[in-house]
Length: 266
Image (cartoon, rainbow, N blue to C red; front, side, top):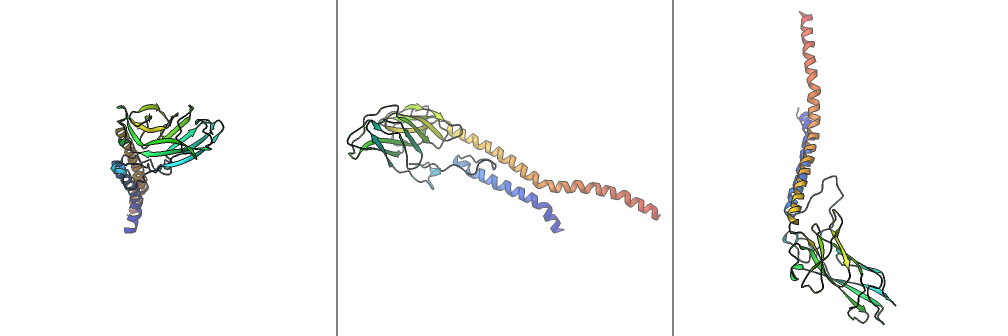
């Protein structure tokens, strides 16, 4: 009887175990503001954001980004069509041809990208709040090392990866004041696009209520977890209910057969 009982309850136990694991995964990450995708969506979370100064919840395991340089070739009319990327891959520059004016006898220009903590810079406009790191972009001619000061817009565009839903891209020439220069985004993607017309500081921005919105997303994930759990439990109960339904008619038909046999013996 013990073996039969274990066979009947094993699907239920499996369903309950799946539910418990998923609910623990959801509730364990809610304090950090991350949404857990449904079990059937995607193959994994995006790479972790790399902070210059991470919030306390993300300090463990954070890898601070480093400054880096990229050299772009110069031609007779100026810099060639090129691009550059930050060391943490969270900034991408696409530079048009002749963005930098020629500077003979220099043969290249160096793009320097430096990640910064936005709290060390001027406050952003009140309708925004910082969204990740700020990045300072500067240019120098090589091999002379002379700073590049003559630019020919439109220079190209800049793409920032950000940790929270993006609202805009901010620009500052000196870190004292910010202006919104672009708000091109891709739905569902943590990136923001904007024009790149001059060196300076670039920062992604989000709305002040973005944190509460992300919390609402967590509530939606809880609903998904409940639905998945209900499905798991239903699958676990199904074999047990099916056996009960099949067994009931057998008992009812057995009773008239016993009565008929008793009459014949009588």
